[in-house]
Structure formats: structure tokens, C-alpha cells
Length: 83
Image 1: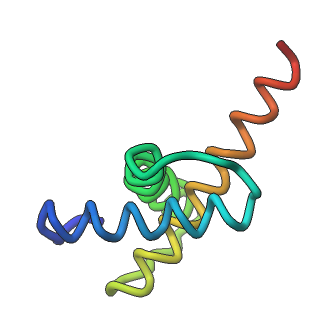
Image 2: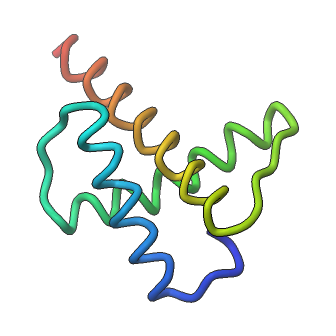
């Protein structure tokens, strides 16, 4: 979410985390949704950068954040399942 102000990052992060929570059927609170969305955006941009894809704009960054948050939830469940 580079290039957006902190308020917009929190709003996009919260929205992305909430959507990922619903898609993955993972129950978290508002603060965790915001964190999940922001970290998901970082992870999503990094993963897409590895394969040479870059999505710009507000909607593009929201999609990347949702995908990244879903990946984070998937990894969390995989690690938690082994413990």
C-alpha cells in the first residue's frame, strides 16, 4: 500500500482483513483485521513481485491485500494444524 497515507492504509487494511476473514471463514476482531490486511498487502505485493506482477491503484492494492491476508490465514492454519 505504498503511496497511501496512514489513514487510508488502516481503512484498506481493515477492509481487506475483513473480506479475507469472511472468505477463509476465520474469526478475528477489528484490530486483527487491520493488521492482517496491512501485513497481507506487504506479503501479497512481495509474492506478486516475485513473479513480475504489479497491481496499482486503490482497487488493485485492495485485491493484493485480500490475497495476501488469505495466504497468511492459510499459513497460520497449516502451522497450527501441525502443533
